[in-house]
Amino acid sequence: MALAPAELCSTCSSELVQLKINVDGHDLIMNSCTTCDTRSWALAGDDINLAEALEHVGTHAGRRRKLSV
Image (cartoon, rainbow, N blue to C red; front, side, top):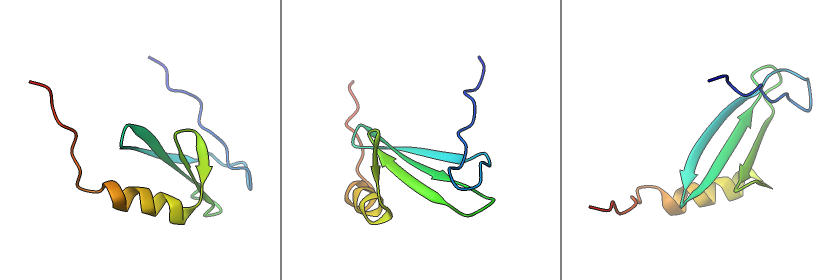
């Protein structure tokens, strides 16, 4: 299985580091450039700002999905 090509920073064209977590069934993604320190966030495919990202994480921190038995 091949890895998807890395996304590039819109500021400096370096490869981005991508962190993805599940927040209530949706992917919250942070893209970070280690070259120019640019960061961006997206939730369920929509761009959001840092305050919105923190709000979503804080609201859902510690919640666990119920497991089916």
